Picture 1: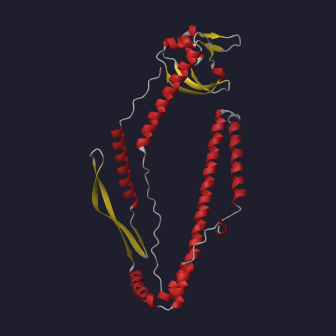
Picture 2: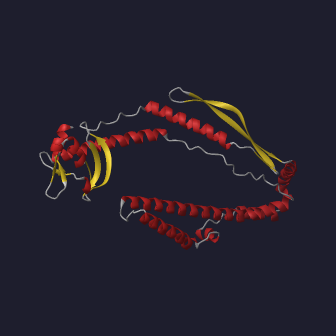
Length: 325
């Protein structure tokens, strides 16, 4: 019988999860706060204090707080100050110009499929398929050269990984194309507003163009879920193994069951009996998944529980195996 695992302590798991989240958040903040200096201005981050956090178990953490400061260049600052005065005067500008701004602001951005497609490459599919079909042909030839035959588990796994990569690449391509279209539509929408604003104010400031930094973002590990998933998986595996084995032993009490390794597919070790005999999950003769033993291994420990049938395949007396377990 396979022993069932002990349930994880919820308080210990919660405390570990909280500590992991806090440490990851602090590290990401430090990695992401990158100071930048451009001809049009600068952006700086400064640690200006900390906040104390107490979790449900009474553990305290010091969370750093940052202040982001954006400073314009001297030339841009003068333009900004002038524009502030100009904005005050806009309230007195006549109906003609202010009406134009109101009309533009009252017009919704056209996000229809037809408008988005104007900025998209709608003929991407043939080239994409041709590239990946060529890669699939190369992969199939490579597998054949390695002696991996179609229908084998290695072949199925390789093709499954390939198809997953292809789908991910297609999703990424479509998402990038959509984002590019959205950026073009937004730019087209804002262009008239910028032109009218330039005519009214006389000049526009040059916004600092901050670059995307190469800082690394550490992912938050869902420690709590991992612990509980591991426990549930181990528990389900133990229960399924015990249930499947005892059910098979009861059904074949006093009889012999086909258990030759040569007739089994998709073999996966799931546990071990007290007698030292390993337990496996497999499909016998293309049938449903079962739990049982391998005749060749049983023969080494309990030779009396194994015999060869007229067809040349080994059989196991599960009643004897279960009694020994």
